[in-house]
Length: 296
Image (cartoon, rainbow, N blue to C red; front, top):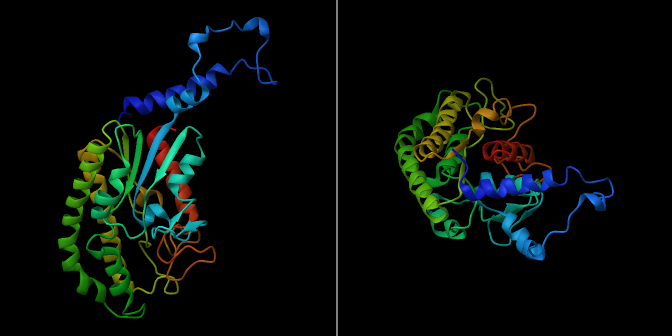
């Protein structure tokens, strides 16, 4: 999607500042005879200039955006939001960004509408949103009911028990995502909105019973559901000409069973990352993907 005018202006301003210093000496300035004093009227107060150049970035979403357990996580507001989640990674890479992070673990699309969208306004330049997995307790059902039979269970007990419900939930979740995106665009009409998908959780083949106690026969079903959720996010983003970050594709080979996983398994990790949630490595990777979508 083309970047909105305000975000383009902010990025361009930063580029102009870099270019303007191209002729600076190592001491931090150019020779006096190269500089003509600017009229006083052309100078703006430093605080006003900084405000004009700042990029207002608001991060929305659930625990895959909040990154609970990733160092350092705060539970003061009940959202268990890490100061190293991808939103903070993006903001730390560019000092012109002013971040408002209202991501919250456990958030549904309704929570985003009622509790997070109010953080947006007409001055917002950039929005990221990852949501959907908590609607109808989708993820909770997959984790709870699908791991209950244990990894040695024969057949496809989870598929048999959950598939019909999932078939009804996914279209409704997609509709909820569309409604949420409409609210985001209305609240921040000049912002570039980047919709962030979910990572790949399970390998296409093989299993790792110590990390994910899921019957082998149910791996394809769980993959289909999580991929369907990311497809819903992509479809609704594209309908509105919004950017979509395909984390599922980028994270192939970094599933729970992988040698270098981006998502944690059944136990809390040594660094504090909670079960079935993204590691710091995944958050860093998503930050880079969002930066590419924004244009650096």
